[in-house]
Length: 417
View 1: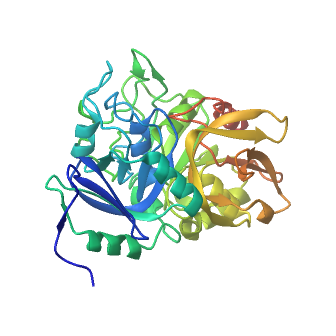
View 2: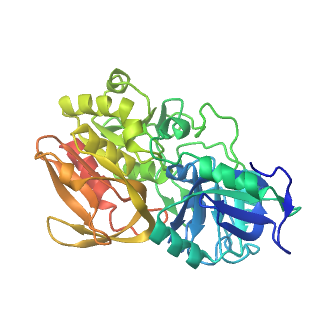
């Protein structure tokens, strides 16, 4: 039976990571106080920690950043992928310093604290990353207490008893609850993002009043920014959308309407889309697929052009009869090489996924377009009998390279033709 009496941490420790196998890793807590249980993974990007923390695909996950200096450029209201952080917390090597960047509106420590997210510094992230690579992504509890008092036995039990991501449908938790239009383009230094959508944020990146659980956007028909009728219309299904995906669709020439993950086929068709985008998102694709796959299959029947990313890629695979599986450690970083099947060229990509489509289960009507050069896993597919394609990686990056931006232009080009 777990001991209900809190015990003192080692001298100087105000935070702890407790894994499902009983491992206890002490550190210095920062950000919000409290505890959170989820899957512990690692991310190899050197930049973009704010985008990573707000990526809805990281719901129910604790991020170990392999780059040692995290938080040194602070936080701002622009570098976010959703209104609120979706990662539960982060683990870093070095203490977070005061920000040193002209764009910083506040420190990373304060930003985490304001958003109720926990940080743990002073951890040997190399050793933790190596353990994840060898043993797989474990369940864990991250905790922070300024008093240094923790009920370790209770935290061990919590980590041990958490069921894990397999079988979890998390898309409903992070998806918008309302339909909205998006007309904001890409970011330019000194100018910010192209105007068009009010995000109701204050200078600290905190949300104002919202009509959904994620994005308090106003419709795209903002004064002076009405969407031209000649732009192809994309309905984007929000399974956990990153904002920069929408920005890239707009930059490629599309008009975008975002619908909830649970939107029906008829609700989508009521918007008269020229094509449909299947977004990224968290959780087990097989669980989300119970309601998403039948809708995608109907979209395929009416031959609507489809483009899927990450979870959207996995759902497209399920819709044509393929299978998905939980990966040993997943792919998370901004340096993943992917080989194109048509010309052999290599793209350096940004990835964030813990599930994948089983290549061997693909039907004859699906061909492999991209392959991961790290482990040979499926990184892209195209249907030969329908106007649909998808990639496992994130062509919008943020953070990451822009080698794959052409995919947005390719999709919008399909709609125009």
